[in-house]
Image (cartoon, rainbow, N blue to C red; front, top):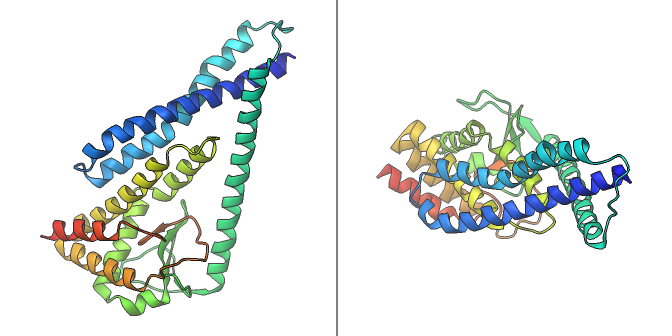
Length: 280
C-alpha cells in the first residue's frame, strides 16, 4: 500500500499541477497576444516556447522536488490512508494520459524516422552554394525546403524548387532554414509536442499556432538581417513562388521538420508583407 499511495500521489500531483499551470499560461498568453504583435518575432517565439514548456517544468519540480521527498521522509511505511474514489479517478486519468502520450511520442518518432528513410530513397546528394551541412535533392509532390534533424541536421529541397527559384531566391530561402537551425527550432518542436501530449486535455492550441507563426517570422527576420534588404526581397519572392506551386490539399504525411512553408500555412501573406516592410 505504501508504494501504491506514493505512485498515486505522484501521478495526481503531476497531472493537477501541469493542468493548472497550462490553464494559467494559456490565459496569460491570450491576454498578452495582442500586445505581442508589436514585438519582434524572435522574442514572441521564445516567450511562447517558455509558456508551453513551463507548466510541465513546474509540475516536475513540484512533484519530484517537494511532494516525493516529503512523502519519503514523513509517510509511515504502513500508511493509514486508503485510495479513495476521487484519487483513483485522478490516478487513472493521469496514467491513461501518460501512457497515451508515450505512445503518441514514440509513434511520431517512428513515423518521422520511416518518412525520412523514404525521403533518402528518393533523393540524391547535391552541392548548394553556402550550405555546409548535407543537402539532398528530393522527389516529392510538396515543394519541400526543410531542415530535418536536431543534432545532425540535413537539408532537403524538392526538385521543383530548384527549377522554380533563381539562385538568389534559393540562397535566401536556405538562409531562412539557417535561422531555424540557429534557434534550435526542431528541438523546440519536439519539446513542445511532448508537453502537449502529456496533457490529457488538448490545452494550448493557441500557443502552438502562435509559436509556429512566430518561429517562421523569426527565421524570415534572421535571413533578412543576415543579408539585408536584398535577402528580404528575394525571400519574399521565393515565398510567393513556392506558395503558387504548393498543392491545395496535402494528403501525404511529412516528417517533423522546419519547413520554409508549412502544409496548410495560412501566414504566407503576413510573412511576405513583413519582409517587404523590412526591405522598404
